[in-house]
Image 1: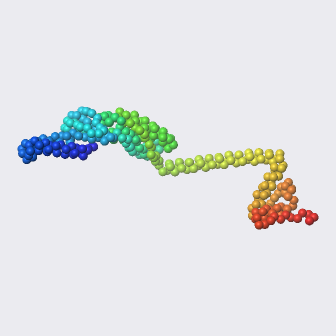
Image 2: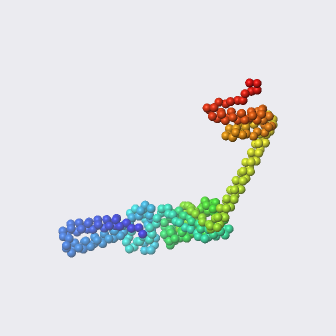
Image 3: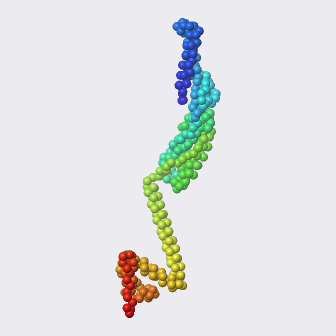
Length: 308
């Protein structure tokens, strides 16, 4: 229950000081019997005024009952009630409130036990209904959320629960909001924080996911090889129709092979004849010249032509 003692105490002190001043001005003596009666009267007035003064914060509403019947909804700010006749039954917080709830060892639609943790965000939009239509709206909304979560889990497959948390949260919000609307409570959102499954099932699902990824990798590799084979087939048709392009491609492949540090290069005789490289000695000299080109300090030497 919210109580603001500072305002009540200040009001009590002000009335008491006013009573002392009026008593002294009237009787001229604070020790006489008449002065005592006046002081007692002002003390009673101060006590009544202090107990009748209440202050509600900006986010709080006070439900006032008069002789057991609903009288009014007060706040925010300062307000007054009739002592003894009126009493404040509830201080209602109208801010957004978060409530955690869970469902342990609940079977899904495909009979898998799971533990689900969720959080509910809600607020009171009708303080009168929240105070008069339900005994304890905090406990009521907690139990309503937990039973709704169990109902949703029992109607949902495990795969859908793991993949579609947003859908599950939306469904929970709708169900809980329908149950709490008569209590003057509005459900803002429901967030499913975690879904825990048995460790054995978790390991099996991990192996299944790994096997599925390996299958996809093999499919992608096979498709890549098929595309490469198609490109090779197109290239072979181009080389068959253009001998010059085939000759240049063979020269480039030989050049790439000779750029390495190896000194021995095996070239088919048919390739040597088609490229006009002459004997194997000429090929070896060509390799040496390429190795010297890689070193700028050395100058390439070519074998002397016949007759020199």
